[in-house]
Image (cartoon, rainbow, N blue to C red; front, side):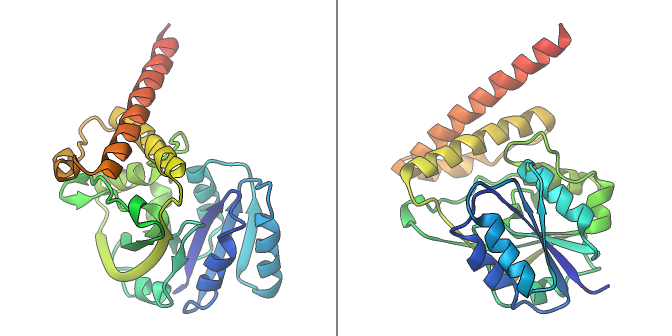
Length: 262
């Protein structure tokens, strides 16, 4: 079937989910939208239900889950043979699905372009990781997988707090995935709008990198690319918060391993 299943996970996204759904319901058909809500305590689920009543191809699933776990649930419920992931606080360009569809059947993984808006001070470039010449840090805010290929790999590793998309991409490369980068497949996301939110994001990204370094010991980030930003105070804060999260993650992981070995 030529359709595409769009999978979204949500948790307390009442401020953003309406804009995302508005950007999706105008996409080229056929498609379906599957939203897995992790028991939001705000009006997120109610907003989704209001769209579900009006648009026949929107489905809400309520299940307490991690980000990766929620996406796995969404893929399992998908009826189409390609699955596109997008974040709840993002919006899609009008031709997002149309452009993704051009790459179907030729590739197992299709990574798209992400354009970040919002507070300019907190728009930082991601710290990239390459594996076998492929950038595996393409985030799941704009990432499409063949459903069969995704399921054969076992989906997202639900033990990851963050960086579950990088882990998935690494395993895809190692499984021989056919990769494509779709420059015209555009998604818009927002930078954190407060310094605390920015630091918190960097901290947990660092924790995710610790999980990655433990699971994939042969993977190394391009840390030298950060040298040019060493005097930039925002990059310095990000890297300091990320390093703190990384150190905490390594200590916690080693502690778990030590307890398991007793």
